[in-house]
Length: 242
Image 1 (cartoon, rainbow, N blue to C red):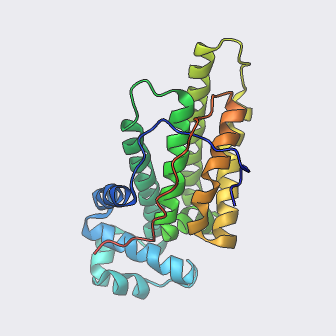
Image 2: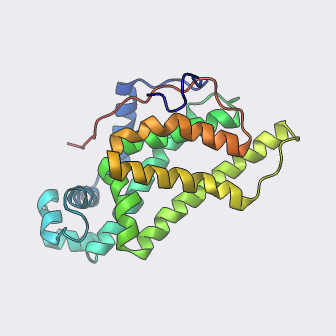
């Protein structure tokens, strides 16, 4: 069911085919995780996805990564350190993918189109990386203050991006009312919280269905002209690196 009813939204950005998105995502993933240290992070993410952080053991991690305990301690001081670095790596993957898709937009893309690209890419990566998404949005809130700090920093960066989009829109239309930082910060907070709830209740695969209403919500709050058409999510399955 269309969460926005019968009215369709549109998007001026180039649409990404599923195979093209998957290939770009694999390249971004390999850039962040293509090392022995990255294999340990992947093992942490997979173990936490399967068992939760509390039940995950060092034996689980090194077994999945197919390395020795000494190799683990070459990179991490303990399980919590590995978890924190996994949160950081997951956010690096998301940030890299958003930057790549933003770079593909036409130079004249308006703030609403740029915001739509950011939100659509975020939702698509979450669907492609369900274990990383759960690690960042669910497990990090229960595990470590530093991990929460990394997550909150990522939300803060999104807030700054929303501020920039709003300021650009006001330059084009001075009649738009100025918004406080507190109000703008509610946009990423609301998107993050709704994503977390859907991730828990329905799974990461359902998150891309939220993208159109997220875009409409964010554009409405920020006073942006919503894109006329939003491309459908590629519907990617969870991916693993061989």
